Picture 1 (cartoon, rainbow, N blue to C red):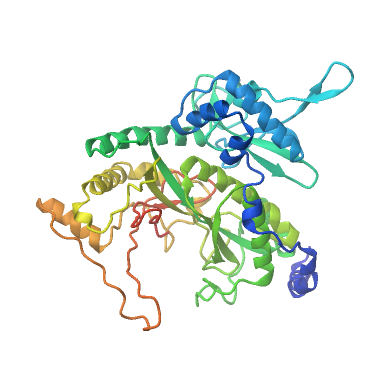
Picture 2: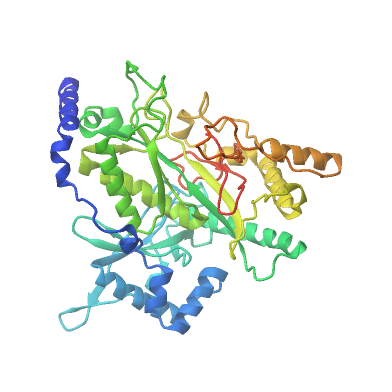
Amino acid sequence: MRAESARDRAVSAAISWREHKSKVATPHERIDTYFGCDVFSQRTMQKRLPKAIFRKLDKTIKLGEALDPDVADVVAATMKDWAIENGATHFTHWFQPLTGLTAEKHDSLIQPDGEGGVIYALSGTDLCQGEPDASSFPSGGLRATFEARGYTAWDASSPAFLMRSDNCVTLCIPTAFVSWTGESLDQKTPLLRSMEALSKQAMRILKFFGKDKGVNRVLTTVGPEQEYFLIDEHLFYARPDLVLCDRTLFGSKPPKGQQLEDHYFGSIPPRVLAYMAEAERELYRMGIPVKTRHNEVAPGQFEIAPVFETSNIACDHQMLMMETLKRVAPRFGLVCILHEKPFAGINGSGKHNNWSMMTDTGSNLLDPQEETHTNMQFLVFLCAVIRAVDMHADLLRASIASAANDHRLGANEAPPAIISIFLGDMLSDIIEQIEKGKTNRTIKEACSTLVPRRCHRFRATRVTATAPPRSPSPATSSSFGLLAHRPLRHGRTRC
């Protein structure tokens, strides 16, 4: 396709968008009437499962207890019935190998009945364990190619969901993926293991302070902010480098880039806003709590961000979010680009990770509270995180050093090669007091006097940290905020 022709068609598509917008479904339903309708959620399980079975499954989800095979059979049969009622014909163990993508092998929910017909069936074994061919997945050199056996194991703490396409519905069961000797072959297994290790050590600290009563475990939570580019499909398919590499390999700079920074938080174009709304409707159906949408810094760049969740669920939802963004875009004549640095001379797409720790009773362990210098429990957790980043800065940096992401890093785009933590004036002052051997004050950040009288007076309470965690996907960059100033409020890294 000639460049002039592609440009003309893209301009024509943009101009005529208003004429065709009526073809896109207009939402009439309240979000709370369909949120999570495609998820086999805890609420759904509680309604459908026998009480005794639900209590046992709940202990497996919340306490990590082993799942009884008889319980698994009942859960599988109930999950199968729910999926069939919602149009499902197949199921898959949905996992995240070391490719930066998700993987799935679909199996039918039907089987011959021996009399020339079929019946629907899903056993507890089908639910809990699968054995896909693992020979062609990356293993980091852990094993020889001919050792093909790999196992998927159900992650009961991450709910099953339905994936809808144009003419079929598939029941997706989130799973971990390991080799036959137990080595991790995916992104989920190390995350689950690290969550258990952190919980074990955090519980020791809570016990020391006498705050462990009623607490069974400590969870890590994360809220990833996904940046992405949208371009017209005519312009996309006119560039073989974009089609093949998801980024441009050559080209000239535009007459106007991001010099004026007028795109950031600007008014969202109607065509893009319609796309965002459609993507959000699909994400809501899968129980993904999308919260924020806005224009990003670079022209054609945007962001979507959910409310934070338990880390393994947040990572599953992050992968679903990226898949949904790309799947929905063609309905609007657009292509969604998730590459970290698709265009030279303008910002790439990073991913803030708003990270924290909380007990299973809902207490945020990184909440400084008002008189922070007296909150010894918080200060212990703060120093532990600082120490961890100091000891493992190389590992944190390496965890997001994919070939694609390193095109983005450097210049004004973080994280830099040297990982550091910025605590803010109040916490830095308390750390200095600790170094001197005595804490006796917490700096109170006054309300801003620069805002008009009729506006809400605010207090600057943000604390950030420039340190990247394990990325939910090596195909996107990551960074994370270490501290939270209020319960259910997370800090973040500025990247």
